[in-house]
Amino acid sequence: MSKILVVDDDVDISELIALILEREQMQVVVKNDSIEALELLKNEHFDLVLLDIMMPNLSGTELCGKIRDLVSAPIIFISAKNQIIDKMLGFEIGGDDYITKPFDNDELVLKVKSHLRISKRINKSNQSGIIKIGDIVLNVSSFEVRKKDEKIDISTREFELLRYLMENAGQALSKEQIFASVWGSEYGDIGTVAVNIKSLRDKIDSEGKYIITIWGYGYKFIKESDYV
Image 1: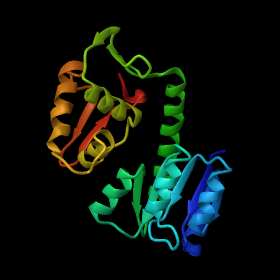
Image 2: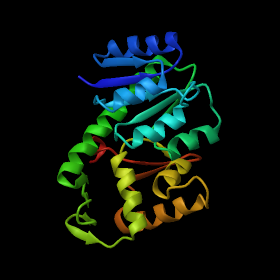
Image 3: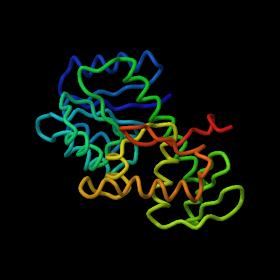
Image 4: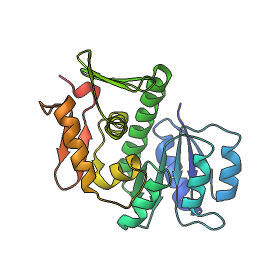
């Protein structure tokens, strides 16, 4: 059973989230104080954290930074703040996703389940050092990429980009999200993402099977189950 931590100073919303996720057979712990949540995370393991941004004492963004020093579990922000700069900041400091209040119950469940699946897949791949989808194999330990057992020469940045796409396979990723996660900043030439995607396609995906363009938004790497 997945164990979820909900951190929100709004008692009604946090209890609603707990009820929704418990119906999905998840174990949910609620903390309405960010400092108490931080202390709990020092002693207990959680598979995923749902985190409000606007809280007294420690804000959600401040708490997220401190959480990232403790755990690698997925962090999903749930906030009434819906400006793109707020979302970019959330991704920059270690968040994995963002849901805007008022939220749709089904969206909440789908995103939580999606990140739990991704986290399990990453943990498995990190144990072996290998991520494999279709004919493409990325070896984290040896820093190698192979397609149909043929070694592909790619740059360090292309390797990190491919790793990020494969670790998040099946998810629609915005150009801004990719740039912030792979380049480590929200500032710079966002066009760099498209340039490196084109280079990756030329080297590993000339048939256009793996890296899908989502026009006006970003890109998605296919899931293993979608590979034919």
